[in-house]
Image (cartoon, rainbow, N blue to C red; front, side, top):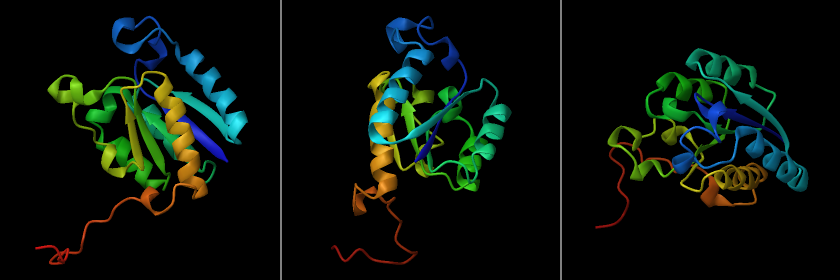
Length: 165
C-alpha cells in the first residue's frame, strides 16, 4: 500500500523551530520512524515537504493514481487554504490530517482547519507520535479494518428527519 506523507511550510525546521512547542524531533527523525513503521505494517511511504502553497498543490496533483492515501500536515495552510483542500478532493486521495500541537488549545486563528471536513480523520496534540498514529489509522481505514465507523459521515438530505423527537 503506497502512502504519501505531505508536510507544509516551516516543518523543515522541526527540531530547532520553537522546540518547547513542537518538540525536538526533526522532520528526518519523523520520516525515519515512519519508514520503520511502514515496513512493519506493509506500507510503502513517500515524503514531500514544501514551503509554498502552489508547490504543495503540485505535489498533491502528482499523487493522482500513484498513492492509496496520504498523511497531511499542511502547517499554517491547514487554517487558510481552500486550494489545498480542493487539490486533495480533486485527486480523490483519502487522507488523515496531522498536527503536532493541539490546534484547539492554540490561538483562535489556528482552531479551525480548512482541511478537516475533507479528511478521513484528524490527529493533533501528540507531537511526532501523531504521524505514527495517523499511519496506523490510515492503513486500517484503507484496508477496511476499521469497519463502517471509518467511513465519513454523510449529512442527511435536505428535509430529511433523523427519526428522533
